[in-house]
Length: 84
Length: 265
Image 1 (tube, rainbow over the protein chains, first blue to last red):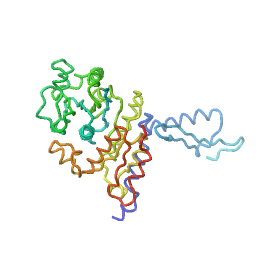
Image 2: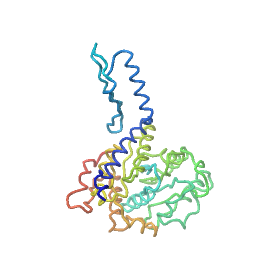
Image 3: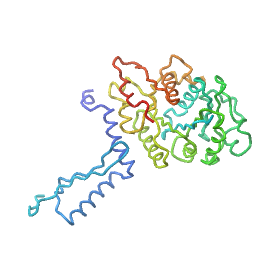
Image 4: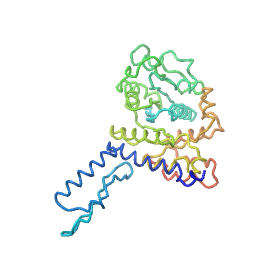
């Protein structure tokens, strides 16, 4: 039983799983499509500025019954060399 | 008199919709209201057995819509209350026999004679559900604190918003307070946070429901049942009264945490 005890509670698990699944259900945007959207978004932005690709964070956030796409895209300073 | 049309729906089947309709209707009738229930689950009739009226059915919803009987002939009077009636679903027909427009017409004909028209929606989001919500002034959404029921409830809320029916009011049914305390069941707070619609009431899991359904006597008639008390409170809230659920089984006020939500429409 020690194995189970170390896990978080099943209610917490249920809530976290539901938070994710409801966001995708409500936006009709399955997780795979969100990944494709991220790739396209980064490709579009990269045409204009250099971005820190590894530090990009794009997610869907939930506020009550509405969702918003939140993108945190750090830009690389001019003249700095890519490190990745 | 012009009745309020209240549709009870859930998305997922088996969460206790029909039980909720029978109990809320009976509690409203016990509070002196004139009530008619319509079972809109064509092909899977069940409200009749839950209310204990299955032996009295002659005509049904489809007979009314297709003109084989007058409205009055299909209305079955309840065994306990003079002013409570049931219009049963057809058992042999498919759900396309009735249209959303038929439901609107039927409710308009019933409105002058009643305080409340309660419609038991079928599970799912297909034609039968569309029929059930078409005439609704208010919608009650029944769910269980369980992942698939909450997910389906969220889909229904989305459809109701898209149809501009407004936010439904939520009934969280079959809550097990002991499991919530062990963090092994979603709490009412969790469910409300996920679905973000106003709460109408919380009904605890109660064996008295099964026993009452066996007998065809809604559990609200059982003074000792916790679920019965919860359904009576829900009926009173529908009537616009502010009632607090009792603290069923915790020393600290477990339930009072949820009542900042009371009175929200």
